[in-house]
Length: 357
Image (cartoon, rainbow, N blue to C red; front, top):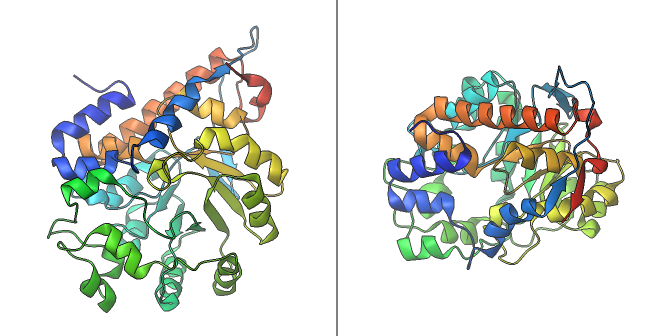
């Protein structure tokens, strides 16, 4: 049966993927309560439809950090895309470009950032971790600039890796034919990451757990590219992000993969939006499975949303065509939801469009 919703794509991915790889994508921290809460929280937000509004034309186009995109749905940074399909991140970049939207490429990709940039004709951002050896991160920034990436996304919620019990049980490691491609020529990667080393050990050995707000200024000293901070969930940190010059904030709990029991992203979103008071754009990821979810996030102040697992299921189901199908599906659902809610443009969507149950 041809997939007609994101759940169908997930079921297709489960059938096609090797089990431990699927569970790496599907799993989250500990009891996976935050993973479930990310999705469930959308069900407690109700849409308040307006009627007798001209919705003969519904316009999804918007702008993010000066970039025009066809819809407020972007691809989040996700690691190890070639677990889903041999074309990996390159296929996702091509699909994003064809859909007229933006992809955020992960540091932990299985295609190099240069390969991703060559594959995707659309705008690209590059997601960063800060390594203990800051020369590693410095080199990644320089490579991203040369390759034409248009912004940097610093993930700030991963000083250590959350306890992902599915991966522990499965002894998850990258298959021998795959590698963290951006580090293939760097000695530390060959020594500390391989088929016998866990992802948790990789993070513990290489990520800088001593990171503070100073890192934003340090990163700013390296580049003129816009810098977004991904992993903000509180008003306090949102204000600090603005004070330290962040060009954007992505409200995220890492898809529930870090601290189980943390706030669902859609619940944290209004708090963060109110805290920044329009001083910097706010985006969100976590739990987006329907076009109505996108509408609700926009109503609560997100400039756009990012999808992770949803596009991975499409990638596993049918490569580039599967990612394109997922983006098309969510675009069509959002367009219909906007029409039925009486909100024909992105600008017409505000908090009056929703209420809490």
